Image 1 (cartoon, rainbow, N blue to C red):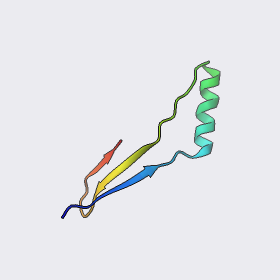
Image 2 (spheres, rainbow, N blue to C red):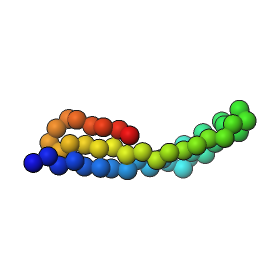
Image 3 (cartoon, rainbow, N blue to C red):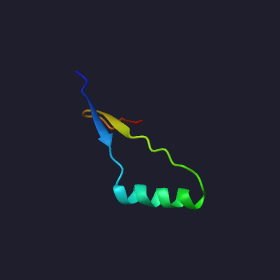
Image 4 (cartoon, rainbow, N blue to C red):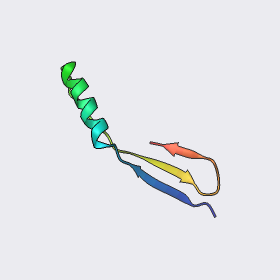
Length: 49
């Protein structure tokens, strides 16, 4: 049986602040989308979304 493990990716607040500062300098508005990693148990296959 195949077990698929889903893990949410959380962005660090300090990285988010740095990116927002850079975007303010360039006069653009950033859009952050949370992603996830899906792994198949007992294999080396990984899918990042």
